[in-house]
Length: 165
Image (tube, rainbow, N blue to C red; front, top):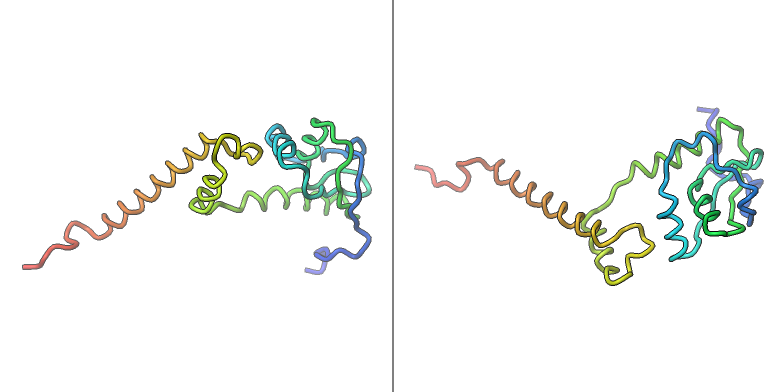
């Protein structure tokens, strides 16, 4: 596949602080994000990470909703990783960034442990979870564990454990 772009930056790409007013939310971004949740996270946890933007258009390829959240909070500049790519490659980056996060999942038990370690009066503030969502997760995990046990018991059949005659 010789048309595949190199996965390694060639040195022409760089990170710099950029005015949020000079960046453009990609007009073809199909993702619908929760800007208020992102803004709350930024407010509580601070800004971390970078946006990825196409140098020739100033379109944001990764971080469109973080840009909107930054604007809503009055943040004037954000770190941007500029990429010099054509429009087709830019769309591939945009789609890959959106879809690859969808393909992941959670280890619910590990997530519950982490959330419970923070749970308290306001410790879940800014992480995108609240006490109700944590309670729902714990209940679903308990139901899933119960269903798994029931499935194992049913798989053994009614004769399991019976003494033969």
